[in-house]
Length: 298
Image 1 (cartoon, rainbow, N blue to C red):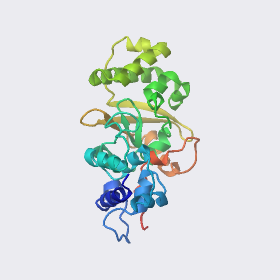
Image 2 (cartoon, rainbow, N blue to C red):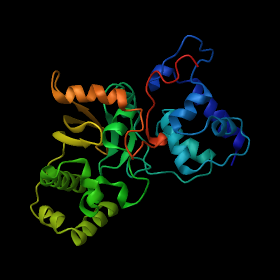
Image 3 (tube, helix red, strand yellow):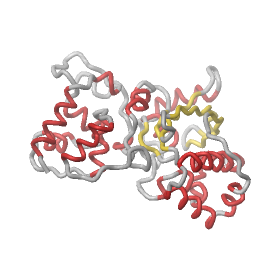
């Protein structure tokens, strides 16, 4: 591993990003052309000391997960992301699939502009890649696992706790929507081994999934009306919207409520209590985008 080259590359990318590009305030005392080291560390969910060691080439050995987080924070495209992994002598992660997938920069750019709206980016198998703080406060943190359990579709039919986010009377609707969406994804992916294994495993473990799969209903979920059970706010009624990446492998989800509705008021309150430790599930800092003013004036 070439620590010096890795550090120089990280610094060169950091210098090219404006704070506004990643949803940060420039602040009145900024003396660097791009991001500060502390800001990159915060965006990637790392300690400032650890990132500084990386950039100075002092022997830190970043894992694949750390590199993926840095690629997201620094807005690396496919080629520059691959170069980062090559410099660190790590195998390349999946380009678009799986919980370690490289988040598409266009979706990240939109996510950063939704600071006042709960929003997150997921894969086509409903694996959360990154959230903003309001989304983490609304729906909780994603699971730490990197296997099938990273997929909400898998957890929905195998782990009863995964359904606690929604009222019991809404569960049949969500089951139908998830299965119809998965069937559309399976057809688009073709002979994808991971999807075939997921479907086969769910058919064995869940009679409900098997019965719904046999209906052959197909529908990508683009919009939906949801009732979300929040530990502080109670049941929150929201509209969920989806924006698909060009290849369909990733989606930006965001939640809204019509002005003047109870849901709109609850979202405003969520913005007030979201940073407080009001619930057991707290967001993973490596997956959560900081609010725009968190580093102002540093």
